[in-house]
Image 1: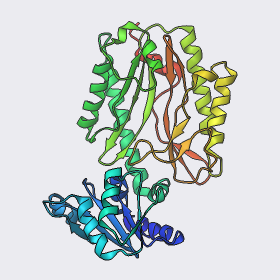
Image 2: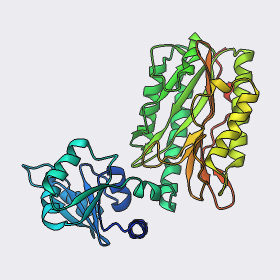
Image 3: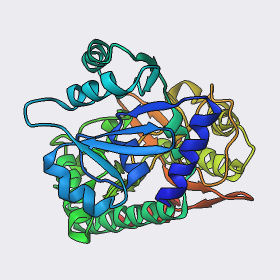
Image 4: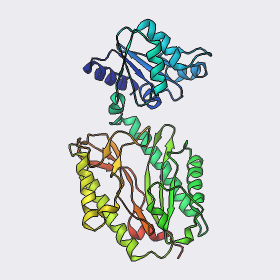
Length: 364
């Protein structure tokens, strides 16, 4: 798989007539080499790859990337300085550099040291390759989903009326690690009652028994790949308003998922969910895009959003997470992870989300 990814990169660079390319994003380095360490660059020159790092990762690189050329910086210089010295001697034409993962200071240092080269920004080349997952990536994501779901089930079983939002967030991560995961994909979002109206609310000391429901948005990290799921857990006697809002969100999510297939515009999928929420009178309460791609990072370049007029392609993996947020009252979001297949889609997550199913853990 690594060799196939590298060949795709070489073809993409040739199409753009790029001969020297410095990759500074650590996730892109991992994707193209299999190296799982930090503090590294990957230099591409005429279909040749060289990883730049330091002595701490010497053995790890030899173990994880045995066929990859390696250059290690000295103990008295930074990585950008080491590569700058090399570039000054060896690159007399354009040097394309990833701009979003290269700091302003690093860019200036390269410009200062590599005086014979012309630095050119080149964004998104590897990220576009990462949009379509290969078989090994899909399997890793499925393992991360399984870890997240098992952790959630264990955490909900442990919940008591006195459990706080922070207790729940901590338990999710602990259970992920007990299962064998590397930890949480991101800091879990846990909101009881009105605090569920904060899409990225940080867990507080608010207790489960202070309202009738709790929103949980979490994910697991399986070595390098991630998952991302959101569920509502009913913990008391829910209001008619909560049940109504929940059903609208669920209907919107189902319709959007049913529309996912190759060739459908990303914006169209967002529009399908958004229209259902608008028709129910909650259009202004759906305040974010419908979903996003993920894999090595929790937010990647695929986006199910209003301004994304690109078609979906097979092997993209996206979240589908419509939400309605009513400040001071409630918030509902339902999120699943979905794989675009050759003929349609496959929902990778399987936790219950029907109203009767999520009400099973009520403490009322």
